[in-house]
Image (cartoon, rainbow, N blue to C red; front, top):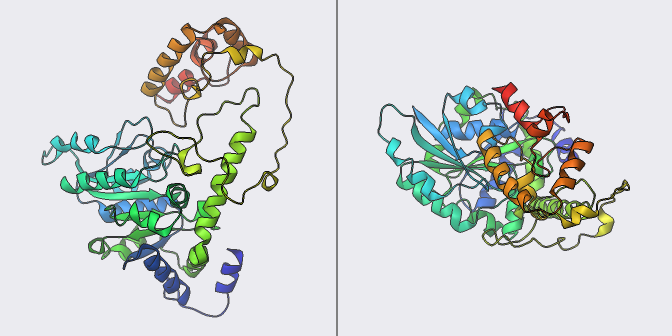
Length: 393
């Protein structure tokens, strides 16, 4: 990437994308998707999502997404503030929407008192590392289009998802253009770029105002060639897939080598790390071809602890019930802790577990006791979940 930027820094060219580097980048994306797509380069992922949604939304329309969606959780309300559009964030245990959820919103359509569901936004791979299959994306697109809605795919980690689902250009096309997606936020920064993302307009009917809207949402780079040159290098000779394959393999390696550290609690490895069935929950392969233990050096210092009781715990393999995910909502926390409480009730080491958590000021649900309950009992945490939630309210 550095070399690509350095090459683009020679000579004199016009600003705002009227240069050979940007035209070469646009041609790369046309080749990648196998059709005459429109490419709009942006500075960052939030900007790309805002631009993509701006091209899809009509007056009084809302965006339907999962409760885990980056646009709903991690963009500081940017779509709402910049576009004035409501987000309808739907519950999802695996951060994936299903067609039935869209049908359940059909009663809003045509009612003047409600924001109109106009866009469905999905993330591939999702914020929880899960994957939509080709069939799942196609089913969502079919339902959305039947209801008069457009489909946006947030692909901040689209390369990782492509590798996990098959690892070819045909794989990418299958869950995007061929499945019926209308517009894609194509991730660059998480796939090796110094900085830069791309909005790929797959439906030609939506591309007309793109150049103007990009300027309005402050995502028009004057020195666009420096972003374009990076994408041109990334998409050449399959480098984007090679980097994603290595990233997935190293994440799996890190997960495996830290799994036995006392006090470290892993959930199941995300599906995006390797080829796996996203419907059966099959474990991804340990390492991608060519990866080796020598590729990563991890030094672990273990404290000597008497943790034999942990091996007898009933919660083994159920980490997701005992520790919160990012931006967990209060209602989701209550449901999760209720299930954790049931597991603890039948556990032979519940008392030992509770004392351990109190002594070590642990976060999460231990020994039938939540963070909030430990805090109230005098075993202080800096900010247990319940206290944080009430403070925020």
